[in-house]
Image 1 (cartoon, helix red, strand yellow):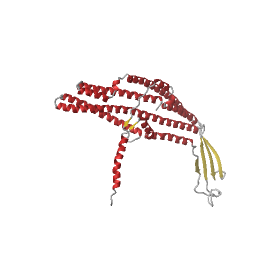
Image 2 (cartoon, helix red, strand yellow):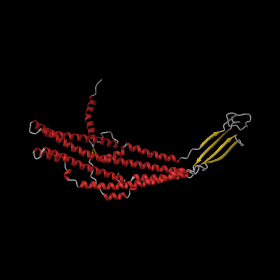
Image 3 (tube, rainbow, N blue to C red):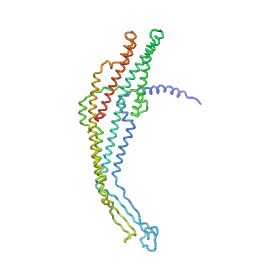
Image 4 (cartoon, one colour):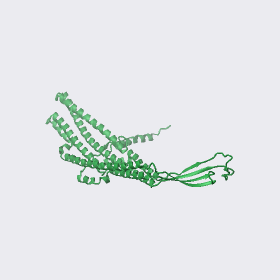
Length: 424
């Protein structure tokens, strides 16, 4: 058998191309807008929630159908005795003594019960649609807050990575100098101690980042590792007056309030149905009796109705009335709770905004540039090692505090938009 080297050469040539394509996909930087679009297209939780809307629509179709008629066959004799009357045959020579009865019955609901049930199912479908919208908004809020947190972790990781690099350089430098007896062992061990702390912090940040990336990939409906980096979030312009104006329209924009108002309507229509249930339904009957009456072939009509003597559905009517009052109170409480949350969030945003404006500019300068300058000062013996370490740690803490303020501010901004029912 002759081996075809052309295929082998082609396969070997394609391996670097495939590897580079996979690496490029891993190294791709996603923007928050791209990840949100992936959420809308791929999130399995959203797909599952859509079935609730479809099921609610199917329940509307079911509510529209009439109840099936019932057919009863009775009084069928399997034998005859000497007193049997002779009847006309049914088929050929069979049926001279055959007796039976047929009854067809149809339920007719009164007081528009069927239409009232349909209207209830229609409101239940609206509730399913609002529940889907609320799930979508809550997922987008959770995704955005996760992206904000990831942005802060990426900045901290880069910063701490630089710090580890600087202290590794110093560790190697001081290790050689301590062996040559030009610096003390204590200074070398001090650098080693700081290096270990920075490495531990870097490991913690990467672990936290990996957990957050796994959550973001799940939101986007992608396998673990598909998203590994994101663009930095854009700065936010806080406009207090715009939010105060949007607060006036929360009943129209906030999904939770729309659901509460819909449930209130649902309780009212349930009350109407309960009152209608007090009116008895009608059962119309048509029956045929062969050989069981004074007529050999008897056809008759009938009507059956329940007499509302003992049960007038008073208990269910009272329950429905109380449910209306309960939903009204729930809606009022929900509005008050959301309005209080909005006022609190606007106030907190003002605090954060003021704190960010007053933050010293040197706290947000390039860490790498500042460390380069201070390392030169250390090498030129213009500052001591302890001063260098004290500066690096305090500068790290200051930058991380600033990023924590930015993170809290951005998260609170997204929560306020969620509370108002805007943008998301």
